Image (cartoon, rainbow, N blue to C red; front, top):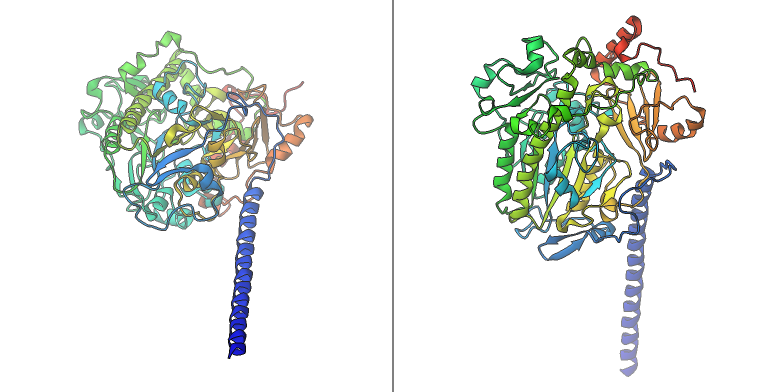
Length: 607
Ligand SMILES: [Ca+2]
């Protein structure tokens, strides 16, 4: 009996040992599978960052000896560091579709300002500008001082931001009006940023110019739980007849009573009205205030409330987009006689290829810069002052929104992302507006403020792209990863702004024209193969094209590796046709380049 008991005990122990051994094998197997997954994922990230410019760092501001500040924000059950989020191999959010009111995930205020170049205090693009509110925001944010758009025009840039995909991947290159068919063909399979937030338990809200045409570019397609209705101009202002009919079909108001100088020159319906300005008096504006003031009031009202779910709120201001009209008091900040116009060296167009000059020609029949010069000795300076006035006006509106956030119940757990969709030329390279591949067109303000203001006031000088916003938001808010995004998360730079980042920023304007911005150089390659190269260490104004200098061949070769291999043809080129720039290029080639764009052949300067 005793022997039988011993045998049974031994048998049970052996079975247990085998079970434990099998379990250990299973656990080891699981660990191995997880390891392979992590290595594969890291490999993907590394392969995306394999490009290395080997440029000499010219980092400015605070340096690596500045201690890294832990990036933290308040959560329902304590504090979660960005480091923890980044290093976790588990999904970055919980599985609940409806996070509790404690807001386990942070809110996001996504603040977009249209057509704002680097003329803000913190970026130093124009020392005369007054932007106290944006400067204050940046002083508590991580500033990305070398940030660039994916496309230098409203609609293409915004769809790149919200889809996380390049124009050359989707085929959405321009502002041309697109119906639902075109949308489905180019972007139908994407999940726009606000849709991803909404699908994962966030309340989504929007007001103003978020997409090109407001809170959505596609009729009946909405990503928002709450969106401010599209603004309608008062009839008495429309009846004045000065509204500028943009090429994409949008109307822009308001104008002064007499329409301003350009209206006096061109009268009704002549294009060129977009290069206009005007100081507005109270009866030139809606009784409720300018649309941007109304958008600010809408956002202020909601930021002062608590919300049951975490929110993603997009607020888009239209100014400083043309027309450069704003309340008169903002013009009074800038006495005309004090205004300096941008530097435009006499022969700066001579070493720019025909494609570059084609872009600089602009959209007015006689040429944009030529038109500005023809409107009077002071018109260029007046336009610069008006752009500055519009910037200060929109800075004041941003200030209202930020004050409401900071003094309200959402101040402790809201990420602020401040960005513009592209830059703006005001005569540099004889070019106006955007829609080119030089620094003035592609450089944008970009600053991210984390709850607790981690690393506030520090600067990342590495090149980054607006494409990086989507994966950054996914990381910061713990959303499920999205397959195929073409940007790279900025989370490492939010943790440490000196964190190395070697992937350049690529901007694309129309089919197969690209600019690659590295830490120190800008390389442009147009669709006919012509090139430009600028060294920002010695030539921040991009006045000397180095593309034909043998010594810079290695730089060109390195930067050209970042040019997209895939360039989806827009429908206008499907059957071998030309787009509008292709036609203009052919026209200039046949008729010659006008004197104001540099009549000499586009050859390298003699050394
Ligand atoms: Ca824009």
